[in-house]
Image (cartoon, rainbow, N blue to C red; front, top):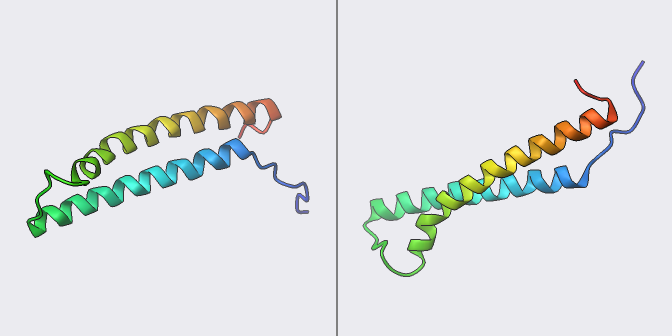
Length: 85
């Protein structure tokens, strides 16, 4: 028989998951943009390129920290509800 109890959604977990995906996606997009600009011979020393070049360093580090926070929040919630799998 199927379990008809609704799955409890946690807003903090959803927000953290979307933040991780957005930051990591933007960082990967910045890496691709820098590689394409470098291959096309663009001058990466001026304009917005220094910011785009540094964005993956900050963004991927922040995404990793948020993954750790997400894991801690998830494990804590599962232990409190008794759903530890």
